[in-house]
Image (cartoon, rainbow, N blue to C red; front, side, top):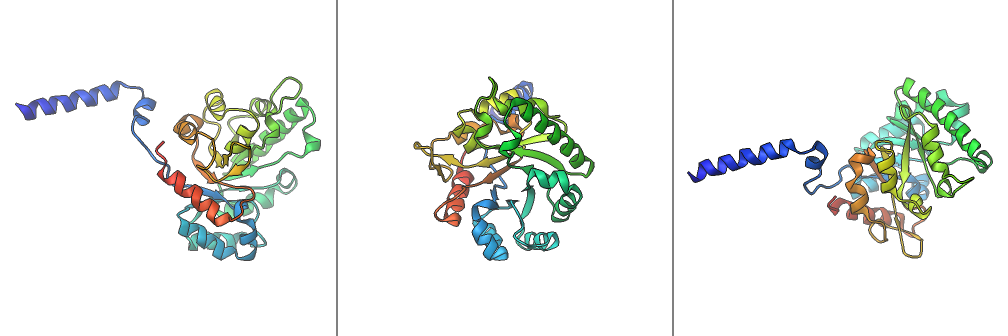
Amino acid sequence: MADRRDFIGLVAAAAASAALPRRLVAWSAVDRLDRIGVQLYTVRKALAQDFDGTLARLAAIGFREVEFAGYHGKRPAEVRDTLTRHHLDAPASHLPLEELETGWDAAAAAATEVGHRWLVVAWIDAARRKTLDDYKRVGEVFTRIGAQARAAGLRFAYHNHAFEFTPLEGRVPYDVLLESTDPAVVEFELDLYWITDGGSDPLTYFARWPGRFPLVHVKDKAADGKMVDVGAGRIDWKAILHQRQEAGIRHYFVEHDDPPDPFASVAASFAYLSRLDV
């Protein structure tokens, strides 16, 4: 009888789970991140001096993904071969907006050869963002580039800093960018330090624009506002990353703009995120 009661209980539990919303079931258990990446801007000086050795050290830490911000004189084929040698993937790369506007064919060809899937613009020149109409025009440019990217089998995203969250003419410019770009071809890489530094809440954006943030930069903010290793600051990573499905996050890139010891910094951030229950 005990076995029968146990069996009936298991069936009932399974039926109850099936009746729950898919999202609730998916996130009811403790989970951890996998394939944590690193933005190579953090180790840019080391990369310029020893490209192969730097990627080897990052792989030894445990990273499986990297995001580029320049190839430091290496040809795309050399970059691809080095990544393969160290069992690394490079889902994304940062490029200047002007390079994508004037040299699209070369940028797309290089990205395809290396194996990138996202081309990411990480800065809008101050002269191009003086008014909200400027931001709308930039949004139109983003949509055009995004369409080119999709046609080439790639994807396009924009990475923020803090200035996009400073109100302008009664609006938040980042909102204008989200509204004025086609979600079918323009995605966003949310820098979780800079949005916090700009006084906004990532969770609000995840809820308002679900699925538009496939990439994030993970770096922490201390009480005095300084950038610190992930886990050493005040950002609530558990709360933010628990909503990764709603946000659409697929890739997490650790970053610190100017750490005293870049390798120690990314190793500490990797260790924290690896053991974080989200």
